[in-house]
Amino acid sequence: MDFRRLEAFCKVYENRGFSKAGQALFLSQPTISAHVSSLEEELATPLFDRLGRAILPTKAGDILYGHCQEVFARLREAKAEIEALRAHVGGDLDLGASTIPAHYIVPGILAGFLARYPAVKVRLHLGDSRRITEQVKEGALTLGVVGAKYDDQDLVHTPVMRDELIVIASPKLLASRGVDPAGAALSLEEALNWPWVMREQGSGTRKAFEAALAPAGCDLRRLHVAVEVASNETVLHCARGSMGLAVTSRLAAAMFLASGELAPVHFPKLRFEREFYVVHHGKRHLFPAAKLLIEAAVATG
Image 1 (cartoon, rainbow, N blue to C red):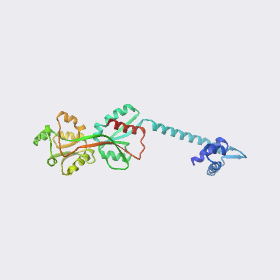
Image 2 (image 1 turned 60 degrees about the vertical axis):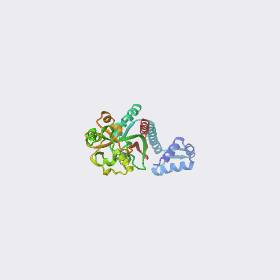
Image 3 (image 1 turned 135 degrees about the vertical axis):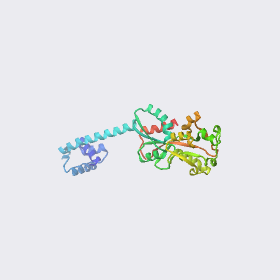
Image 4 (image 1 turned 90 degrees about the vertical axis):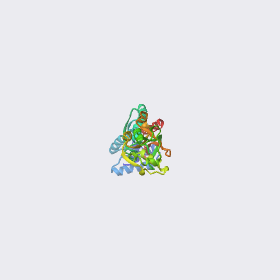
């Protein structure tokens, strides 16, 4: 049944007249009459008895009006609940994060956010930057915090903070090759002869490293990748175990650098910087919790 016809019928029922119903709905009397006639035709029964200038609802009209009131009441409840949802900062939020943000950035963001909005429940999903971005694109995640930007017109990337990447190695490995750990520096040509510990395809760290190599005329495929791993923690421990040079975030390596278990290796021709982003689907509606989490991430960064 057409909603407009039912609305017209209810106004005629309540006002006991077509003209008054038209005035209430800002419609002409013939339009109201046509709506009611269409309903009567659809139901194959009269809804009103026309008694000269007066009209009275039939038994069928009474039944239909009662059900219409129930339907309209449920619609008003639905509208009220949706309006409350739009204004309420609560509910479940599926957040994805790539390795480094998940360990070193997201916890700080969530600590302040959840203290302010305790009715929100965050489910944190981990993966590399590409996979998290794909899940946001697919709708499996509402937001993602990633270390790489993948071009897609449907996705919105909001910068959160800048990150410095560094090359690291164990002092033992450096010393074994005649390099002073206290001020280690290598050229790209020299680096081709060293083993490397590398993140997997899809990693934001790897993508940023490839971007840094390109201006210097070096392709990642020229490096001797001895070990390829799927997490930043594994990168750090492999590097600490003298398995090769490795690229990681300074944030992630800070504790090992401070303890002397790892040393930074300087490459004069390379500039290692990247951005972390909050990514969301630009064509999906964001409820308040998601919008406020983006604002919290930007403010924290």
